[in-house]
Image 1 (spheres, rainbow, N blue to C red):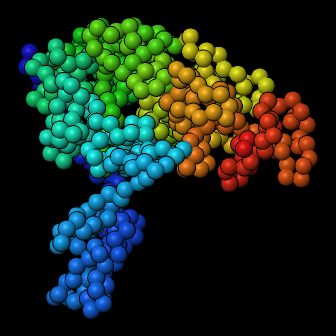
Image 2: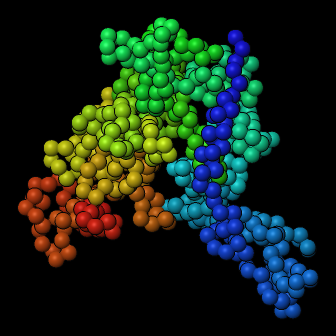
Length: 489
């Protein structure tokens, strides 16, 4: 079978999203356009001599930046009359950090990334921040064609899928057999099927009159577009449905592209299901021989174990309700839909989430969490929406624990709870000081620790996590009015 070409509509939509919130190029550091990344502003005359990284503009008789402006770092004189933009060197505990490692965390060199994907400090090296180090780009991450020092993984090549300035790593292929499940082979490598024409997430339309499926006058079963979080009809490479009428067994999920400047772009695609049930281990590997670690129909792999490993959890729509219509599919009454990517759909339509049990660190009946399958879970006082890292009243979610967790006060591995609980219940992996490594920090109830030394409300006598132990004090960490949650410091 011949493959269809990439949908022009898809590429156009990507271009629109990526340019929706452009950064003002005249203010790269938030200041004036003539003072960038530590370079001195132009001097009004050359008679007093120019700075070491300036030259004299004899026509205007003004000292100007010798590099003409640096997007990152500072202009440095490397030899007589030769200037280059160089990244500012960072030293941590006497050690020189690698390019892209721009911060000291706990005394060690570290790169910095963002949940949006943009502003990754490893961009200068053509890499991506992975933990504290700059790592080579992975599948669907932006790359630099021809860069041998920041090459794609073995079996992948850096291809200009969305243009020369937006190349990404794709798996090389000669036909669909070389691709993973849910991907199709194109002239630029394996790509998620949703990028191709006629490969949208679809379901058949129920017919309330007879309990079957709605058909047109010619007897053809009609289809509608399904949003992420729903199941979808599986199709062949030509876009022809290959399973019986209904809602399908595939999972309408995201294929996530990452770009250095333009951030994360989640693209909807229908991926065939595996055999892993709720709570069972899963991996971000969709090869034909790994069905046992691919989530079954209606489930999404929540990567909470570290890296690309996690557990299967039920899919849901994490988009906030709009115009009184509840998002579908919903979670149960005792569950919350967790917005793993902290993403908001610009069309107020759907955002992929997973269902996790609700909890409250200050409620004796709700402060413990059942296992997710065989994986222990911690009650983490954070918002399922991702808007607040620390909840104001102790409400939280039961997050599956990482492969190993740290004890209270010990250094922990992950500060983003959505990537797995790195501490026990009623604790957050956090640091209030950039020079100090994140550690498991217990929370407390500020109402139960009044500044006047009183005992607080009567509930404090029996409330879990009300007060600190080990000689620590309950400290306010947010200025939000009415917030009860503090840190034991």
